[in-house]
Length: 205
Ligand code: SF4
Image (cartoon, rainbow, N blue to C red; front, side):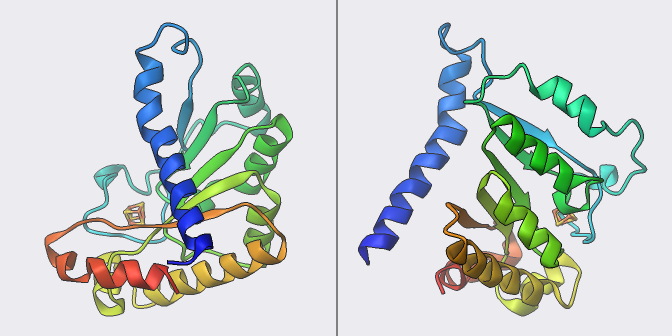
């Protein structure tokens, strides 16, 4: 394993521990429990895919009412300590109304953030938005080999779109010298057990 890959693994591990374990410690320690260490925001219930295992189930693609404006988000987020990591999920965050403006707000306020995406919705504007944002960690869903992934995600183009997204993001973040951890997130299902190792190898191209 090269030194860079080893360092990337260490950083990745550290972020995971901070994001998922320390929040538990913080929540149970008097000194820390007054400030959220991680704030999870489900920014939208909209998604362009329709995976049968979707954790949102009937909550997916519901008509959204009472969506917060950027000004309202600013009022909510401003009092938080800037050590709070904003972890954004959705359904698919890039379908959220004014998501680019929301990311700009996080950057302006001085927050670091992470985003989970299916990696199929992108264009030049979205890439620029990611690169210019304070996203430091991006999790991308990939569940196995092409045929199975497409079947699981209900789209014949899902695998191709997602792997192209990963490659392009790697290229652009490198060009921009942006500190960005790109991770593949895999749902462990009966259907993809045999594909878990190949999916991991795809991530390492
Ligand atoms: S991509 Fe994620 S949010 Fe969208 S349908 Fe699939 S599991 Fe649900």
